[in-house]
Length: 145
Image (cartoon, rainbow, N blue to C red; front, side, top):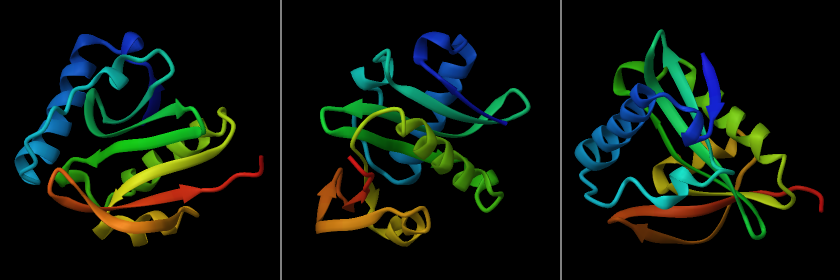
């Protein structure tokens, strides 16, 4: 099941599971020690996309408006649920929510996921750059202005 919620709409258990999943994958699995929890999570316009198996968060992402459009990120699927179809559902939900905001949707994708995001219409732009020691590419889904 996919739902979109602000941090204020989430239960304490959902918040715990969201942060645990992101830390388990980004910090532990990918060995990227950084401040995973940031102020953008709590912004009233940020929506967390939660993919749940029963009462357990097994995938997530977030979308928020920027001055020139919106941004999708913090996309992760629990290792036990990769390949299950949850990933595309999360990305599509993020794209759909981003349509509420004028301008383009931007993703700073890990370089290994550029091809994955291309299937949703995102286009890589600019040079590869390091973010927390991992190569990334900026990608954009252009919309008519």
